[in-house]
Every structure is written in C-alpha cells, then in structure tokens.
Length: 267
Image (cartoon, rainbow, N blue to C red):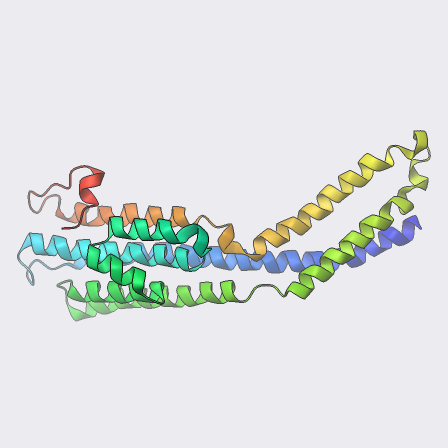
C-alpha cells in the first residue's frame, strides 16, 4: 500500500508540474510585456525631448507645452492598460480620480469616456508625438515605439482573455485531494513506533502544506495581472516621463517647475 500510494505521486506530480510551468510562463510573459511597456514609454519621451528642434519651433514655452502633452499622454497608456486588466470594482474610481488629476480636463474626460481606453491613450500619444517639431524621419522612430506598445497591449489582452482551462485546474485539484485522503493509510505502518500512530498527523500536515502550496502557487500565477504591481509600474513611468522635459529645458529658458504639486498642474 505504501509503495502504491507513493507510486501515484509520480503520476500526480506530472499534471501539477505542467500546470505550474504553464502558469509561470503566463506570469513571465506578462512581466516581460510590462517591461517592454516601461522601456518604450521612456524611449518615446526621451526621443521627443531630445529631438524637439528649436529651429522648427523657436518659442521655448510652446516646446515645453508640447513635451508636457506628450509626457502626460505617454503616462495615460500604462495607467489605462492597468485599469483595463484589473477588476473594475476595485480600480474604476481610483482610475478616474487619477486621470482627472494628472491630465488636462478635456483629455481626461475623453479618455474616461472611451470604450477601449488603452487604444484611446495610444491615439493621444500619436497626436502628441506628431505635434513635436522634428524631422519626419525621427518621428518615424517614435512611431515604431508606439507600434511596440500596441503589440504589448494586444499580448496582455491575449493573456488576460485566455486563462488556463478550468477543467484542467479542477481535475488536478481533485486528483491531489484523493491522493491526500489515501496518504494516511499508506503511512500507517511507517509510524508504528509512535504512540497510537500520533506522528502520522504532523507528517501528513507537513506533506499537505507543500503539495497544496504548489497548487496554490499555480492558481495565483494563472492570473498574472492580479499579482503584478501594475499601479507601481504606472507611477514609476509617470515620475520619469515628467522629468524628461525638465531636464531638456533647465538650461534653455528660465522656467522652473517648482514642487511636485506645481509640476502636476496642466499648462
């Protein structure tokens, strides 16, 4: 009996390993896509700030406003995507409040009213990037990064919209429950040395914690966007994209952004 029960362990670990690997691959792909989003949002603002040509637009205040529009539009994409991939009951109101605080009123209301908010924010990025005074060849470079953001958005939606089949999860869980129900019978003879086989209880609990822990780990990783700190990613993107215009204009004209609250106000 003891040998037969542990022989089943080889069988039950196979679907558990497959499920854990599939769940981890979903998490790893989601994290990689968000890493790409972070990199390309930085890149868009960096290129816009570095390539904003004073010869095409001599007025530094107009250039500052155009870069301000770009940086705010770039932030709106990861924040909209985070809301798109999260529970609306938890994030809808914080999203509206944050958008109205950080975007200009007309932009904020247009984004909130959009049916597909990430696509609306990508549209705003394209419009803001097109308004930056620069040669068209350099603008094409920015458009390539925007295209990558579109691809990353689609990949995240694919992960979010195609979870691991529920029948596979339930079948693995049932198999694991049955195995643990039979495990005490297999371990009964091994604990003859203890009074009334009392040590069988902590041994069974110990094994159960590890086996069901692996099961719970796979369950959590199946939904990577409930685990990833998307709000933290969005906040980091906002802080950095708002600094790029400041770096570019520190020495060009005597405009100071003041404290963070002043910097968050629209022009």
